[in-house]
Image (cartoon, rainbow, N blue to C red; front, side):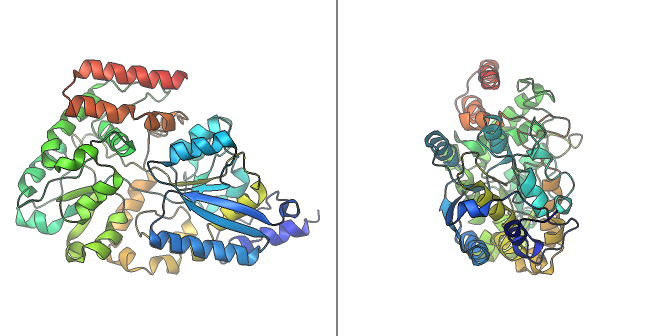
Length: 445
């Protein structure tokens, strides 16, 4: 069968993933670029740090050099603001054509509502066998399609530690349990330095981090078949411990979200942190005096009998179903994994977003980075933790995918539970009953 010459030119290995070593041949996407001459692609992402934007410019320039008939425009959203922005876009029909760095559970919710284009052919174009085993499981939908793929992995709830402060206060090993963590906080909270920058605000960080605490206490939000199960002993223990930890957090933690929590540790205001590997680049650039003393471990749990639970939001790439430029968008989505631009994007915050492709991790260009080399043990730990990570849309390997997870996080019902019990002192039975009813309503809605 003779290939369409436009297709052959557009998605060959040389043009779509130039230089990438992969184990599968480039599949031919069913593109019709002749019908989309002079197409303009709008690319949205909540990740807009200067170094990341510089990488995006490289990716856009390289793509447009190959496809001058297509213009790509990058637009920044925010971690807390993407949901209402996308809701408005879906409502008006004026949607972006490619969206990246949103958590997988949000994409599952959008797909379940008919708002996302199946991504199967893009995954095939990238090279399905080049992904790490199971990397796309979280994106598999109820109808058997894929709603997107990962632009990277993240280990969003690592515990960051200051080895110098540990040594100064006589702590000879990283805490593995909550009792050990509480003792470490008490010892290191001296001289104006607080123990931890945990979030207590009514926002997504509080919800997402506290879900980790539930699992680290041996609990779960849902049963594997998605029955609401948040009212359990693990959640109650997590709420009690989270309340105990409040005294070791700065006063402003009542309103903390991602940015404030990150800054708390990087600035030296807290002895520990809870974040992804973005800590490493920020420490290097903003507080290099502690750079030689920073390390990370998986976050402590109630006892060593409970397995660690790493929150991976599976930062994604997907295409809205209402896009008017789907063919061009699919080409660009595949091109985001071209080694030059993809590695530059990963290097914009080394350890923050980790590669999902085996060929990229093995690429000397990726390994040739000062942070990845200096903190090799930490990056390896994060990579392993993230690969085995979960989130509310994928609570465990036994759970079916939860396409309502994004709505639950967006409702702040779990963050509000934390505020009611931990900050306001509300009755735990009543608060858990109300949270269960709200979550049940979302599941049935």
